[in-house]
Image 1: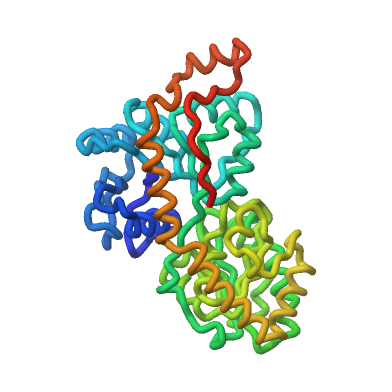
Image 2 (image 1 turned 30 degrees about the vertical axis):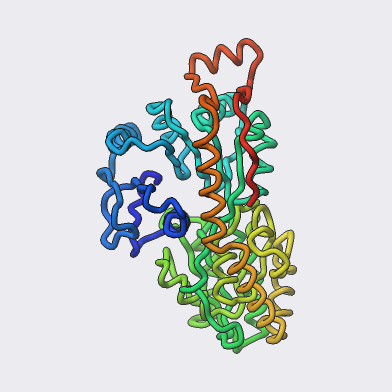
Amino acid sequence: MPRGATMCRRTVNSMETVAHTLRRHSRQVNAVRMFCDVGAVEPLEADLVTVPAGLTKGGRVAAVARRLAAYDPDYIEHHQQLESSAALARRFPDKVHVLYRHTRIKRPRDPIGRIRYEARLKAFDHVIFVSEAAVAEFLEDYPAFEGRVSAICNPIDTTPWRADPDAREKLILFSGRATEEKGLEPFCAALGKVLDGWPDWRAVLLLGDWDKHKAWADPVVRKLDRFADRVEIQKSASLVEVMAATRRAAIAVTPSLVAEALGLTALEAHAAGAALISSGRGGLREASGPHAVYVDPPEVDGLALALSDLMSDPARRAGLGRAGQVWVAKVHSPLARAAQLDDLRDLLLAAPKPLRRRRGWAADWLGVLAGRSSPKNEGVMPYIAG
C-alpha cells in the first residue's frame, strides 16, 4: 500500500477499502499479505505487515524492501504511487510487479516528464487501472504499453450501504474532495438556485481533504451560509459519516469537471439507493451505466434543472435508486472483481520471464539519444477488461 496508508477501520480511505475488499473476496486470500505503515487502531486485516510511519520516501522503500525480502513473494502489487513503487520494484528484478492505479496517470507536460514517467513505468510487468476510460487515456499517452495494461473496476460491498430507495429524506448529497476539479463550485451555485425554490429540501456536503484545499473551497461553500442549517457541511468526514449521509439522501451529485478514473462515490450512491446526477466524465459512465442522470458539461443551469426534475418526481427518484442498487450489486460485486484480479495474477505468474527490460536512467537516456523514446514490448499479456 502507498506511503501513509495504515489500513485502519477508523480512518480507511477509498483506496484502502478497495484493496481490502478485493483481498477478502479473493480465492488467493491466504497467499496474500498486505504491507502498509504502522498505526492502525482497528486494523482491517489481522495479518498486516507494517513498517514505521513517517519515513522519508527512500527510507520507506528500504523498510518495505526488507519486509518483502523476508516474505519472498512471487508477485508484488504496488498500489498507486509510481515513483517509490518503481524504486521498490527494481530491487526485486526476478519478481512479477504490477502497478495498481486508483487514479489516472497525469499526462506529461513536456518531453522530460515523459521520459521520467516511462522510465518508472518500465519497472512493471503490468499496469491496472480502475476503468476502461483510464486505460484508453493511458494508452493514448503511452502506446508502447499496449498489451501490458488492464481495467478492473472497483468493487463495492453493497451490504453496509444499502437503504430503502422509497424511504429517503429530502436531502441532496455532495461527497468528494474540496477541489475545483470535483465540480464543487457549479454544484454550490446550482444548489443555491434550487433550495430557494424548494424550502422543504436540505443538503449535506461531505468535503474531503478540507485542510489542504480550504483556501479555495471556503469562499465557494460560504455562499451557502444564507441557508443556515438547511445546508450541513462536514469537513474531512469519516467513512462512517459518509455512509450514514449517503443512506439518507434522496439525490447524490458527482459533477466532476475532469475525467474520473472511475468514481467510487458514484458506486456508493447507487449502493445506498440514492438517485444519482453525474457528469459522466471518464469512468463515471462505467460506474453508473444507464442508471444516472448525466449532465455534461456540469454547469450551473444544467445541474439545477436536473436537480429540480428529480426533486419534483419522487417515483423517478426511487426508480433510479432501485435500478442503481441492482446494477452495482451485479456488475461491481466484490466476487466478480476479485475473480478478475485473481485471473490476471495467475496469467502473469504463468507467463514467460522476463516480460520486460528493467533499464536504469542511463539506458533510458541512451535510448532517447538513439531515437527510441518508448520501450518495446517484450512480452504481451492479454487485455482484461473491467
